[in-house]
Image (cartoon, rainbow, N blue to C red; front, side, top):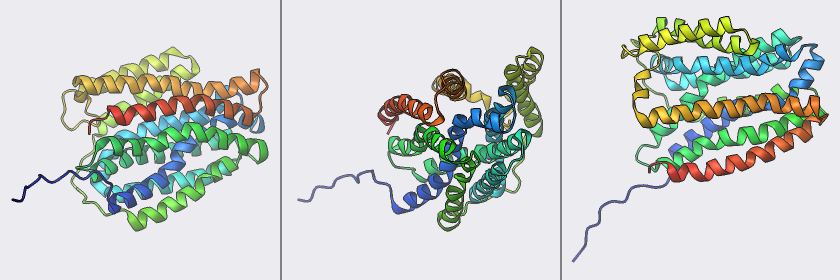
Length: 325
């Protein structure tokens, strides 16, 4: 007698998914490395561009601020133009801004191109996560999550080391030229391997929400970075107005009603707090070692990489085990 067994769930990653992952991860490596690679060079940038810490820190702050502001509009752009077009457009913007940053004649020009880099990177990261999770439907989510998290974990480890090598042996401008090979390769792979996705030309953008959220968060960060409480308070009030409005709308720019779900709100709080520890340290630790301890850029980068490697390994081991399959 023949015994029938239920079909087993596929646990492998098929060739189509691997091709998509290759195209996306190649492009996003430039964004992930660029988030950390510049921090080691802040002291050098300040000296060579004749700018103080209060000015040159906007090379990092402006990048992260623009990156965060671009995330909320990604969903509308993907619906309106398709994920492939948004991905290639964002990667092209990031690549062009990287070249512009490498040619910057002063701190204001460098900061402006870093903001453009942040806009491109902010559009790419949510598209990466959305496409890979959608393409992996029916497969173990833990394995997919680990794959998505890999470049995020490698960036803070390898970025400072690469930045230290460049600052010590080459011009600081090569920090931005490093992005070019990743960007060009990512564009070619995306054009060849990414499938086209349907578009919804009737998708609407929450313009009022965008007009509240973007300046609100920008004013908060600007006020805190300058230790000026009035912009920070004004930004907090504007952000609260956005939250109050979004809580009553289904088509809000950011669906804040998701925070009513305990697991989602806990994860969001953890991400928020981890950002303080990670990005605050990435700005202050390099400046402390170089300006107060007299360490070279490369030596400081290796100490940073060693410290973060332990944390990255713990997260890499813990995350797949805790992610539902």
